[in-house]
Amino acid sequence: VSSLGEGNTSKVYLVKSIEDPKKQYALKLIRDEFLKRDRDSICSVEQEIQILKSIDHDNVINCVGYGTDGHVKKPSGRVIDNLVYIMLEFVSGGLLFDLCQTVGGMGEDGGRFFLKQLIEVLEHIHDKGIVHRDLKLENILVDEKLNLKVADFGFATYHRIDKLRSYRGTMTYMAPEIKEGKVYDGKQIDMFSTGVILFIIVNGIFPFKEARRDEYFYKLILKGNFDQYWKKVGGQHLSDEFKSLMQDFFNPDGSKRPTLAQLKKHPWLKKPFSMKITRQNILEKLHTIRCERTTES
Image (tube, rainbow, N blue to C red; front, side):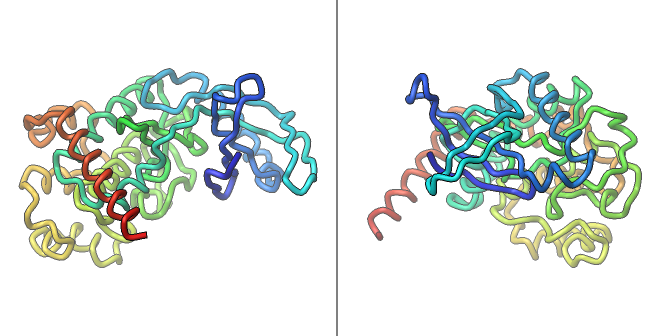
C-alpha cells in the first residue's frame, strides 16, 4: 500500500491482507545486498525471527509470519521473487520518535508514563535471556492510546549476553563501552539506551551527541560537573530525583547503572502520578498541535 520506512538492512511497507483487505500489516523486506554480505547477516535475520517468535508481550511488536519466498509486483510491473520477509502487526500511531518531535518534552510524568511500559518489556525479554542492543525512539511504536510497541530486534541476541563484543546499536543511544571496543553486558547496554530515551521524552532534546569521552556534554557528566551540565541542557527545572537517575543511567561503568529491580524502586519512579491523566494530557496536546497545523495549512 505504502512505504513505512527503511534502514540499512531492510525496507518496511504497509500492506493489506488479500483474504481480508481490512487487515493491515507491516511487511519487513530484508535487503538482498545485506543478506549477500556474509553468513553472519543471514544468521542475524534467522535469530531475529527466532527471538520475535519467542516473545509474547503486549508492548512488543507481534510477528505474524515470515518466509524466504516473498513475491512483490512493483507499480512499474517489475516482479521480484524469493524475497526474505517478516510480517509484523501494523501499529497505527507511528514512531515514538515522531511523537517526541511533534509534542516536544513531555515532562517528568510523561517520562514515568512511558518508562513504566518500557520496564515491563525489558523485564520480559531480559528474563528470557534476550537483550535488544538497539533501543531508541525510532525502534519504538505507539498505538492510538500511547501504548508502546518495541520493534526491530535485528541486533538482539541471547548468546552470552553478559560477555558481548559485537559493535551494535545507534551512535546517539550507544553506551561508551561499545564505542571503546570493550567486552560488555547486554543488559547494561539496554539500560544506557533507556536513559537516553527517557531523557528525550522528558526534556525534548538529546542528552549529548554521543557518549564519547571527548564530547562536550558527556564530558561534563564524566567530570561530575552536573550543575553546568543541567544548565547547558536547559534542565534546571527538573527534579533532583530525575537528575540523579539520569546521572546513574549515564555512568561510564555499566555495573554502576541501575538494574531493572533498582529502577523500579527508585524514588523518582515511585512518585505518585496518574497513567490515565498523563495519557489524556499528552493526547490532548497532540490533538491541539495537529489542529493548529491543519488550520495553518
